Image (tube, rainbow, N blue to C red; front, side, top):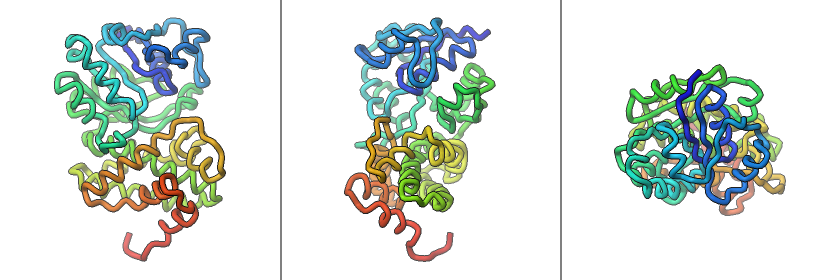
Length: 324
């Protein structure tokens, strides 16, 4: 059995899953939550949340120092908009608890106010010393816990890091592929949530048959942005973006799809929809890099400006005729 220690920072849906999965493949596992976290308190009291049951062998902690000292491999799964704050907290720890670690970023988002990729936020706050990779791709906690496998993606500026992490973290549930275009992987993984919002709106309007066109145009839209930013436009057709469309645009477990549908139906949404923040970040990037992002613009017009959803979405598919 693999007894390598792994620490997981973040005890929400995905954080608890990463702790569950690391423990399942034999890693000594510690799961951290912020002091006073209700999610961590429930896990401590009941050893379960609405998604899974944690074995007693998974250690729980509110101490960031303890979590960083526990393992050389640290998985981070927190809300993208709280990521910089966490990085700043990590930066206050002793250098030996930061610089000698490998951090695995498992969020699919962009910083709302700057449009920055999370790997850039990480470097700004923690410098060049810690090793870092991103872990993205399709799959839902509910499916993994039910034993349904999927393929996922590891990417890093250090091409030797993803294979090493894959050897540590692979299981019958997850087969890893490696991404060589970190920029494209991060933009694509974040942006698919915006397309998921649009898909949910189509469901709410009773227009799910337009999802095929939405997928084709969504991938094309993001490929242009990635190219304008200096990445590989073909990256969006891999696991980080197009490969994640089923889980994001169709699955009942998709928070972004559900948020879009609930918005149309006038129902409340209790779950985080990261795509709402990502749409703002993408709009900034589109302006900066002179890339046209009609799907992003349509989603934002509905959510931020109260535009008529049917008019905004149908306008996407009734634009002037041109070559694909």
